[in-house]
Length: 257
Image 1 (cartoon, rainbow, N blue to C red):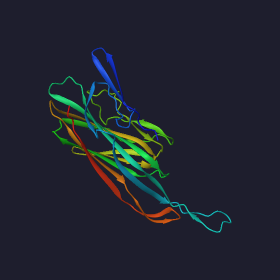
Image 2: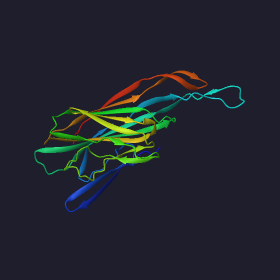
Image 3: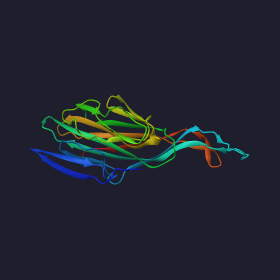
Image 4: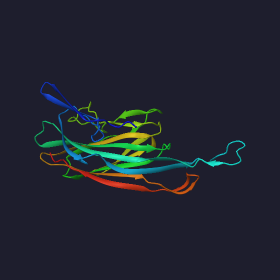
């Protein structure tokens, strides 16, 4: 599995504007780049990534009965198993506004140590602004896979924001299935993304941009829910029955800068 590699900070000067690019060269950092000057002001965890194990079983594939063998062998259920590793990064975006400040939260997720051939599995990622009161905000949009083999789909905001350039690199989703998708719903200051196709998803990122009163420091909560199925009956080492379940984790990050 390809993981993001060490972060490289590349600064280019065009006129009076300094542009900072944050490239995904190390799993400890996020897959996001912006064309404005961006300063990292929140980083959780401070070392490595948060991890939560997932386990998702598919349909029972029945038995394999070779000719003249005299017996059948259970194929069991295909599985998608691994660890969802999450990094939270908050950036303050340079702007010319005196009354307002702009921040960007990047939630960067890698499906690590993946095993199994199951293409399914659903992950839910929720982002909630804890405070202060937002003047405005926008979140990354719904996406769908575009082809059957491994490919990346670029992430963009559901509505454009002038303060964050349209060419901003918000990362991507890396899929290896044409049936995978990422859908978003919102309620108040909470957005929830539902990823379908965990077993064939290598990398995922979702983002929120917020506008707050000058001097205010936004805080965020990120809730992650993964499938955590338990095999209840196995034949010859192949799982044939299981009990469905989920596991959840909640992470928080602020903007100290």
